[in-house]
Image (cartoon, rainbow, N blue to C red; front, side, top):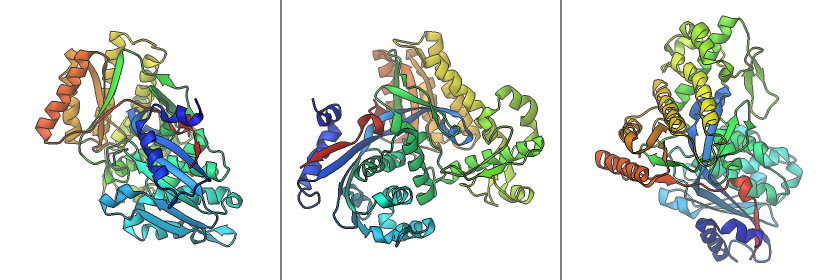
Length: 484
C-alpha cells in the first residue's frame, strides 16, 4: 500500500477531495507537477476549555470533520486561493494577488498593512488565515518563498460550533504550504506558528490548545497538553468502555465574541490584583513568538496556584467584579497583550480567576483517572469523570460563558444518568457552541444519548448537529504528494 492509499483509505472525504482536485486539472492544477495535500480535523474540547491562556492543562480530541488543502507551486509570483464553498455565504470564492503585494523589495510589509489590506473587502476576509500562513513563511523563510502558488480548499468542519474550524483552516494550508516551499513544520512549532497567525491576522485572542490538538491528535485518542507555553503529553487512548459525543446547541460561538474576551480579560485582571498583593511587578517577555507578561513567582501562569492556596490566601482579596474604567484607573497596563479593557464592561474577576486555578486541577484529576485505563475505567471512576465535567460547566457559567441552550443540554444529560450518561459540559470558548457528552459504550447509553438529542430538538426547534468519532491530526496524516 502506498502513502496515498494509506492516508485516503479511512477517510471518504479525502477520496472525494482527490476527485475534485483531479477535476480541476488542467485549468487550475497543471498536469505533471506535484500537488501537496494535507487534511486537518476540527477538535472537541473534553476538558480544559479556557484554561490554555493561563497555563493550564487541557484535554482535547479530534473529530471526523476536517479541512483539506491542496497546493501547487507556480512559476510566477501570483497567488490564487480557491474555495468554492464560501460562495453560498456571499463571499468571494476566488482570491488572487501577488507575492509583491506582501513585500517591499527584500523585506516583508508591516503586519498592520497586510491585515488592513486583506480585511478591506469583507467578502474575501475568509482567507485571512491562509494569507497569514503565507505571511508567516515570508517572515521566517523569505529566501524560500520566491514563487506563487495555487491553493484549493474544502472543509466540512462546521462554523461557529466551538469545534475549532479556525484552527483547521489555519493548519491544513500551513502544513502543505510549508512542504511546498521546502520548510519542515510539525508539532509544537506548527501549532505555535498557526496560533500566531490567528492572533496577528484576525485579532482573535486564542490560546494554543486548538492548534496543537488538530496538529498532534490522532484517531480515538486525546491530546493532553500543559500550556506553559506548550508542553504536549503522550496521547491518551479513549477507554473501550467509554463513548464521547458532541451536541451542537445551535447557538453560534465565536472566540472573537465579547463573552470570551470579557472572561479572558477578567482572568488577567485577577492576575494583576494578585501580583499587587504579592508585591511583584510582571514584565513583558517579547522573546517568544507571542509576547506575554511573566513574573518571578508564577511566571505568568495562574494555573500554578493550587486551589487550596488560592481559596485560603487570595480569593477573598479579589473583587467579585470591576468595571473596565475602574480597573484601568488603578492599573493603566493590562497584562494580556491580546485583549482590551473596555471602560463600559463589568468583568467577573473573582470567578474567572477561580476558574483558571480550579480547572487546571480538574483536568489533572481527569487525566489521572482516564490514563492507562485500557479496556475500561471503573464505575466509580466513570462517575468521577462525569462530575468533573459538570463542575467545569458550572465554572464556565460563573465566568459568563454559559448559555440557556447549552445549560438545557447539560440538564437533559443529567436526567439520563441511570442509563449511563456520565457527564456533559460546554466546550471551547463557550457562550454557545457544542456540548461534550461522556457515557458508557453500551447500546442502552447510546439510546439515552439519542433521547437527549430528541428532547433538545423538541424543546428548541433546532436540529442539532452531532459529532461522533475522530480522525488523524495534521501531523499523523502528513503531506500527501500527487501528480496528475
